[in-house]
Image 1 (cartoon, helix red, strand yellow):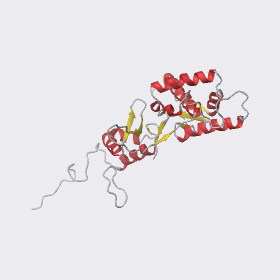
Image 2 (cartoon, rainbow, N blue to C red; image 1 turned 180 degrees about the vertical axis):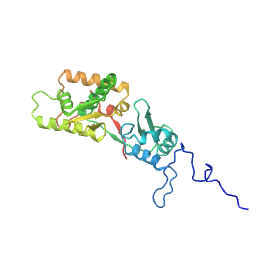
Image 3 (tube, rainbow, N blue to C red; image 1 turned 45 degrees about the vertical axis):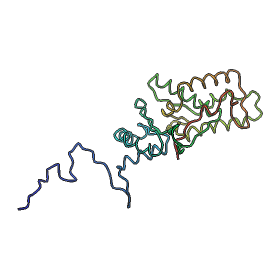
Image 4 (cartoon, one colour; image 1 turned 90 degrees about the vertical axis):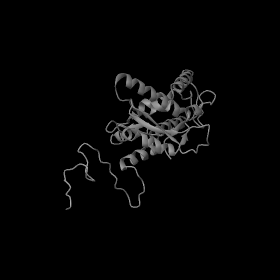
Length: 245
């Protein structure tokens, strides 16, 4: 006599307890991948960069935490390290560095000009101030232009070019997703908390001292390239990994 299976039995294939999450697995034709779709989306966002942010990617953040081990493993396959800041609730990838093997480079380096570095330091300081007050770090375009204007050479014969360099610096920060436009607020932007992870404490201190000294002495920027003298403020010290392929 054939036995009948109780349809309420949770051990039946395809049935799950009510509180057991069911991963979405339906994908494209010919797919040989083994990861759930939401986990794959986390991997793609990390590769696209610059980060997975719990506020902006609210659906991806819990998936990242849930599957952290497998995400790290898959990134290690690509010689990439996943950096997760649980306090700030952001994560990004950086290139693995090794003295034992020749590591292929997947991430590009974004070399910053003098003004771009000065802007990132200003935004980093705004983040620190906002954290201390328990607020979101929001800046206006006028705030950024005013801060960078102190580095313009006195009697600059090409003021229009200097203004263009400021615009380019702001655009670079937006391209790196370090500035997010705040809708309905005019020219105001929220500073991404990812910026806290891109500079070490030592780099912040060194660069801040250098730029403060240059600003107080009315440092003249080379209007041909927009870079500081490398001996004074090396662009390489502000060289950051742009999280894109």
